[in-house]
Length: 113
Image (cartoon, rainbow, N blue to C red; front, side, top):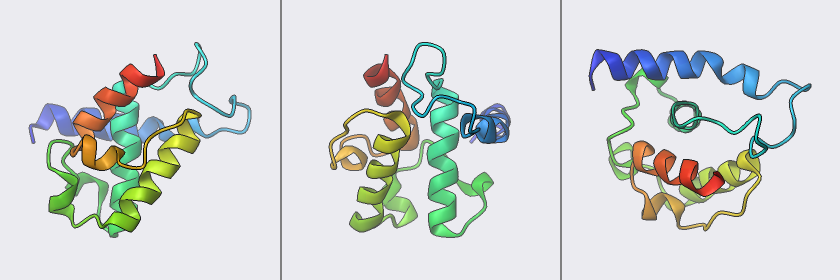
């Protein structure tokens, strides 16, 4: 992973708490609060890191979820959390259909826009 990608990921993770402020609308799929691709990448990376009990810096958005040992139960949970966060219905097979964070984030940006 390039230093530029790591910097973008770090900056996006640093902005995550603002996405969850109580004065924000509940779902980011309104015009004003739709997350950008980098924010989605950071959100997924942070969730994956927490689930795997590993530093977020160790998560590469271009590495397949399978290489992180993400089992089907955690993949389904991740899909459910994304669905709740984004406020749109997502298929439970999402993580298998888009096997990297980068691919999944790209799909989700298209899906919510």
